[in-house]
Structure formats: structure tokens, C-alpha cells
Amino acid sequence: MGTPIIIAKKTSDLTQAIVLHPQFANRHGLIAGATGTGKTITLKVLAESFSRIGVPVFLADAKGDVSSIAKAGASNPKFDERIHSLGIDSIPFAAAPTIFWDLFGNQGHPIRTTISEIGPLLLAQMLNLNDTQAGVLSAVFRIADDQGLLLIDFKDLKSMLTYVSEHASDLKAEYGNLSPASLGAIQRNLLALGDQGANQFFGEPSLNILDFIQTDTYGQGYINVLAADKLMNTPKLYATFLLWMLSELFEKLPEVGDLDKPKLVFFFDEAHLLFDNASPTLQEKIQQVVRLIRSKGVGIYFITQNPSDIPENVLGQLGNRVQHALRAFTPKDQKAVKTAADTFRANPEFKVDQAITELAVGEALISCLDEQGSPQIVERGMIMPPYSSFNPITLEERQAIMAQSIVAGIYEQAVDRESAYEILQRKLNESEQQQNTSQIASEQSKVQQKEEERAARERAKLTQDIVGTFAKSAARSLGGTTGQKLIRGLLGSLFGKR
Image (cartoon, rainbow, N blue to C red; front, side, top):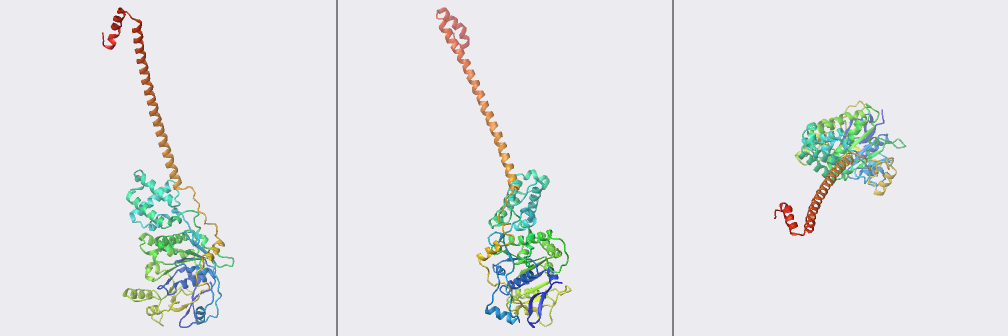
């Protein structure tokens, strides 16, 4: 059994701690609450706590403030007042071992994957395709596989779509109707996604997902921080990327069953983006990954404003919950509060739905699994303070951390090996060369024919000139009257004269 993680102190009795048991941390969790109620601090406290017991963490930094986890905290009057109110004398301020990542390669090490690795299902979600268009995209992937064409980056997929569009009639018998309208829609959506910066995400070297599961020389788990402030402007890309990472973890990690602590804890901020407008097929895949990935030793913690943002069949799998304050200004808000309250095991000491609206900043309703794995009754508690700073790190501090990172230099330089684009381009060039060769041969044949015709005309003219010259010569040699008569007699039949 691992050492319990202290999340908070009970509001009613600050001598009693509210804990999360590491052996059940892979039963997933939820951090919910309105904006400004303390969700980010709870996220940092949990991430730091997991790191200290040797569990690597992955989280998305949606606003840029979680980067402060890489810098040690410091005392200030407000902070000191907070810890004294919790009965804590001092905090051992410390920075957590951190690796910064960024899909765009600006605020962290670049993250890339290939078109083939992300697959047609997730790519269709990213491109916001309907069922018919998604089916055509799947056929394009199948054609590429059958013809041995690697789909690595954006230009590979674009060239493959062009190839399929030009040969749709030839491919129809084996792969079904490849509608020009669907192919055109995919191409347009692909261009739009590229304009949003997604083309930087597809390529090589592809991310080794196991690089997220590392510890430092002191045995602390690395906290992998994804710079997501820019990524949030493209929610489809953000949600699909995180789902792809979960899928990769699920496929690559072995079954381990129940451990003393997780192999990795994954925090999914702005979790509603994962479920908004997701197709039924994708929803089913999400539910499958959440349900089964715990057997790989991975815990998933969703962070959102309201539990109702999470589908019920996923919400029911989240055993560890931290609920910050919700506001009930409208009937819709009141219904959301009641829904959130109903997800907890009731505490007879207070009304949960009323308490949710009364919570102070940094206070939460907490219910984790007990030592037997059963949900505990909900408790009202004050979240513990983090060891790291509250102020985001500077650009210089970020760059210094990146330069010393254990993955520095591995992903920075993009590689462009031969794939579908290069092969199809070579075939196109060869076809053009053959056409040019045939055209040149045809033109040479025409030139030769013209030369032969010109030579024939010259021979005919030469023959005519010879006959004419002979006639004139004969006329000069026969100067007499008899000769003239003879000439007219001989040549008159030729020229029609006498």
C-alpha cells in the first residue's frame, strides 16, 4: 500500500486530513467547479503529490499559469495566513521536475505524430466530417495501405486525396463509390486545419508516448506540461490530440492490473471539449479507453466546470472527486447544482446541494475511494497549498528548463523521409516524361515525314527541269524548217500544240 496523498483538511476539523489512496488513483477522477474557485490549485496539488511519490503526470496548461509548477514557491503574508489557518507551520517549497511540450514547438519540445498513427477515425473527428465523408477517408487510408504508400504528414494525405480523386473510376470496383464531393470536402477541411497550425503536428520524428513515463534521479515523476493556450483556439485539434495520446497509451502499455500507485496520471483540462459534437463512434471509443486504460496503470482526471459536461457512462467511472463551488443564479444553474450533488455519497452533517453554492475559494467537496475501494461519504475540505510558485515562469526560465531536459534535441529537428507524396510525385514525373518522350517521338516522325515529302517534291521538280532542258536543247540543235516541223510533230502531242 502506498502512502496516502493528503488533498485537503476537513473544514469542520482541521486536524483531520482528506486523502487519496494511490492504489486507487487509477480509478480516475474529476475536478469540477466554476471559474475562479480554485480548480488550478487543486490540479497543482494533486500533480505535485503524484510526482513526489514517483508517479509521472501529464497535464495541459490551458491558461499558461500551470507552468509555475516548475519553480519553487515562496512565502508571502497571504500564503502564510492560509497555511496557519490549516494548522501548518511551514511548507517545504520546491519545484517539480518538469518537461515542457508544445504541438507548435514554441513553448516546449515539439510533439508530432504521423497521419497513419492517428488513423481515419480520429482524423475524421478532427476534420469535422460527416459519416459519408468519414467513410471515404477510411477508403483513402485503405488504398494507401494496399499500395504501400506511407501517410506521414499533411502533404502525403493531400497528394493521396488528389490521386484517389483522379483515379476514382478505376478504384470504384474495389473500394466503392469515392464521391468527388466528399473528396473535395475532405480536402477543404484539411486545408482549413492546416491553416490553424495542425500541419506542424503531423510528421516525424513521431512522439514516443513512453517518454511521458519517466522519473528523475531522486525518483520523482516528471510532470509533462503541454502548452495549450494557443491550442485552445482549435478545440477539435486539442481534444483529438489528447484522445490520441490516451489511445497510444492504451495500445503500448502492458496489462498490469492493480498497482500500489499508477504508472501515469493524465489530467484532461477543459474536458467538455472531448465530448462536444463527438460522433457516436468516437463517444464509444472514448468510453472504451476510459473503462479499460486503468488496467494499464493509467489514471485519468477530467477537469471541467460542471459534472454534467461529462457523459453519465463516463462520469460513473470516476471514483475520486473534488467539487469546487458552483453558482446557482438561474434555473439551469440550480439544476446543474442538484445534478452535481447527486453524484456524491451524501453526508448527514450537511446538505450537499446547499454546500456546493457556499464553498469559499480553495474549498471543495471531496469524495475519494477508501482503503477497500468504496466511495467515501462526501467531506467539505480546505485544499492543501502547493509547494511550487503561484507565478508563471518567464520565457528565459522556460528555455533554460527545456535546454536541460532529458528529451532535449530528440524532437526539435523535423525529418522528411520518402512517403506517399514523394512516391506519387515520382510516378507523376515518370508519367510526364513518358508523355514528353512520346510527344517528342511523334514530332520527330512528323518532321521526318515532312522531310520525305519535301525531298519527293524536289525530285519531281528536278525531273521536270531535266525534261524541259532536254526539250530546249533539242529545239536548238534542229534549226532547219524540217527540224522545226519534226519537233512540233514529236513534242506537239506532249504539249497539245502543232
